[in-house]
Image 1 (tube, rainbow, N blue to C red):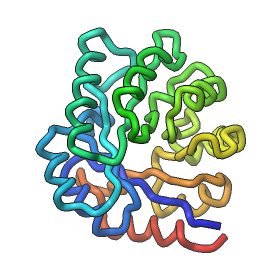
Image 2 (image 1 turned 90 degrees about the vertical axis):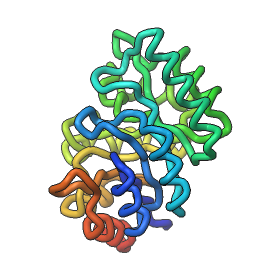
Image 3 (image 1 turned 90 degrees about the horizontal axis):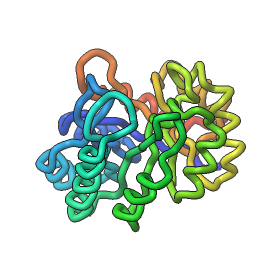
Image 4 (image 1 turned 135 degrees about the vertical axis):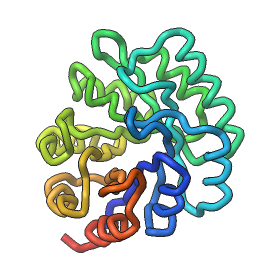
Length: 226
């Protein structure tokens, strides 16, 4: 069986370069660490593209906070995708909910159409969805390729039961990618309990950037045979 892949969330260029050299399979490029990830600026994306030889998915999120957006904010998200798409990144990361916690099918479909043919991840807005199992079917129907989730808990370890259920329900139709508090200290048990194709970590230990040694250890543990 193929070993799971490792995506590292990087909130600045330095983290992205560290992650690329340390063996990440994919980078989720963002800014706004304190806000949980927002859209990075074009120059950061350009420099990352020039210096990295690893898949680069870019966060499309105009602000921190909830995942229901005003007309102006939604227009900004569309503009960001249109501009960044020209930079030949490998994919996009976004997610929009309705006020009652359902997947906003209309707005997400519009962003997916704009991003096409690039693959798109629905980010941890999923953890605020009213019903994760209904939300998962909505994302599959819309055409998202991946959903990033902690199983609607504080972190992926606490969410293992729901994560395992989501992977089973997905049945290969979408990649359910556990994320949230994943570190080298707990990734082995997550890998054992959740049959996921990809795992997500920021690999931030102390400073506001990814830790190379932590990424290497995360990768090693994912490569270990069960």
